[in-house]
Structures are given as C-alpha cells and as structure tokens.
Image (tube, rainbow, N blue to C red; front, side, top):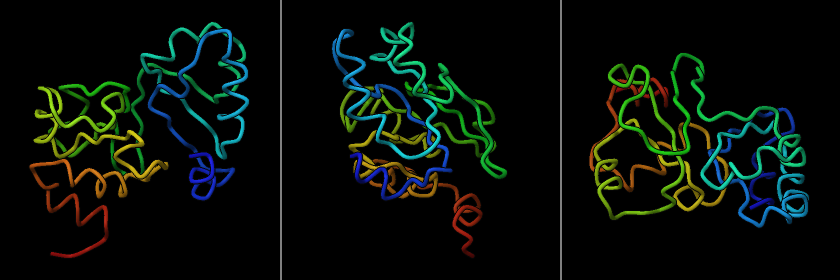
Length: 166
C-alpha cells in the first residue's frame, strides 16, 4: 500500500485519510507509524476513525498529520464534499449534488447500511478494499463505487466532473 500510495501521491498533494490509519496496541503506536505513515508522500490529513481515538493523546500519533478532525467539509473546485469516517444519512447540500465520502465499512455488501448506501449515488466508499488499495481522486472514487451502486450518478454531475457531453 505504501508503494501504491507513493506512486500516485506527490509530496505537495493533500491526502485525506478517512480513519483507522493503523490498528495496533497503544504501546506499539510509534513503531507502527514509523513503518507506515512516515513513508507516505503528501500532506496527510486524518479524519478520525473508531480505531484512532485511543491514540489522539499520543504526540507520536498527533505530530504525523497536518490536521486531525472528526469530520470535515471541503470544497474541491466547485464541489462540496463531506468527509466522515462513518457513512451518514444527511450531509451539507446533499440534494444539490454534494458528495459524502466515508470509510469504516471496508467492502461490506450485506447489512442494512450497505444496502441503503447502494441507492445513495453521492455517498462514496473510500475504503482501500473498494479502491484498489490506493488513494483516489473524486473521479476515481465515483468510478470505483459504480460497481457497488444500484443508482447511477446524475448525468449533469457526471458531465461536469468528467468534462463529457451528453
């Protein structure tokens, strides 16, 4: 994963990691981070996942990220994107073409949440299992998520994102 990450991410790029950056015992956090996060290119921003909370008081964990947030609303060009570790039901400008990018579910296809998300065209799973174990742009997330969706992305948004016509 480190190799794939660095093949794609340049040192000046900003990368949002949607939680669970490492899973290890608290006493092993420094070593885990040194073996993984320390080798990743880019400006790393962490959205806390359920496995991250136990480390946030540890300076070794905190110092490796440019920012650490529980959730973040960003604007990428003219698109609003709500980042959160967990999938959520409502997000800012949901009904106006804004995206919600989440983690947590890995590649789960069963369960009520997974079934509900299949019909949410603008909710995108950023887990590595769905995205070829590498970081993705918004366009790549959309493409990678089409295989787990029952509804297509709105034609107008698709044209705008991919610079295509009709």
